[in-house]
Image 1 (cartoon, rainbow, N blue to C red):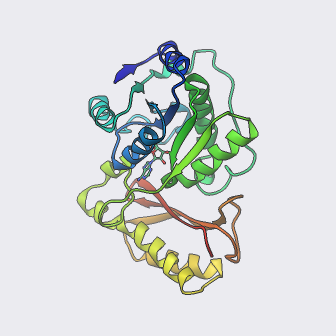
Image 2 (cartoon, rainbow, N blue to C red):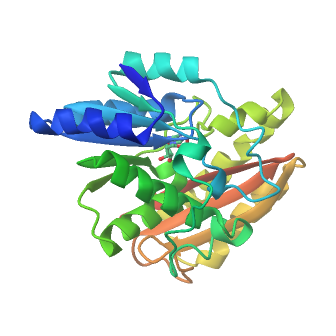
Length: 282
Ligand code: AMP
């Protein structure tokens, strides 16, 4: 497995693979890899001849008061995980390699990005779309792998690929959880032991929502309120949002009739965590 830092090195390697007729899978990440990322790499290794993992903490998707500086980083550990999983190349650029001093072009979206995480993170998806669009152009993958953990991001990337005719398949992968239900996240490392316990309230509230839907409840407001009441029993939790939205348009629904995304963002202490369930069949 190679680790490279420049766009040119990635292009040279991928060109060599393509000349041999090999297929290429891309797994975009911000590093500090865990089992969730590994599940994406495993799937990419299964479905492609060669796999590129990008490890880049993208400054453009962080707001001015967010955790860009403190975001955990450990390239040696990431490289060991990627190598063991069978990845072929890590692309680990410096921010200056991705954004030259005169950088001034962006990919933005009018729909899908205003609600959910877009409300409290207004510049986030512009940063995500721009960096993912760049990675798609740099690597030219046949398939790109994204986790349902970031469900809004998955929907936004799928839409961007359709709108802008990127010639690749977006593969969505299920959420990987800790044994007690907490969704795996690089940001879980911010939690102290008391907060780690408190963070379980995200999964518990989603289970509550699921239980209500499975028992026949169709009023989104009833489900939402039950989940909010449950989260409010946890003193360390502060709700950013609890939403039930159409899984295609990401617009809030009043009645649950088709595929629905139940998405939540909750602060546990100062750490903002997200989680969700998707109900495909109602
Ligand atoms: P990140 O490094 O947080 O930007 O995540 C990189 C990719 O890994 C994204 O597509 C995430 O959705 C995915 N991912 C992160 N955590 C998980 C998880 N617990 N289960 C599945 N995919 C995940």
